[in-house]
Length: 105
Image 1: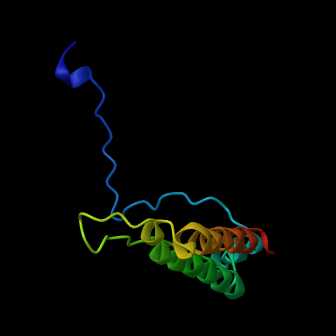
Image 2: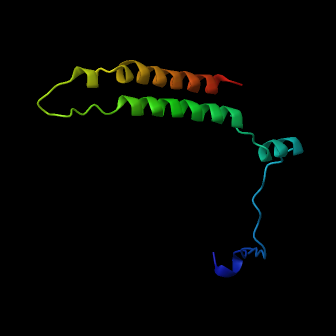
Image 3: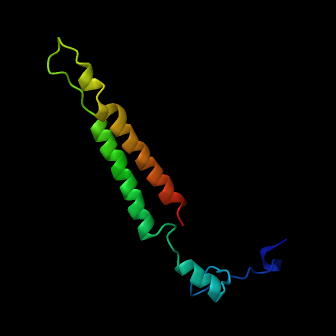
């Protein structure tokens, strides 16, 4: 075939960029997308902070235990009421408050 017998190719020129197709969204769905509520309220976050505070105080009370003299072992410093009873009770109370705050609705 010769070049004169071949049909010419059509060239299409556009002047503006085509917009991508957007799915149709109802006004109700659009309102639901715009308004997103938080899972927890202000009161729940306050309870969570109280629980974290109790856990933190329990950890602080449990820390320490340095001996005044390296040659002397004092059981009263290591196994005191503060470290064996009070601090673990505060930590467990903090965990209980956290569980309460999460499940409270």
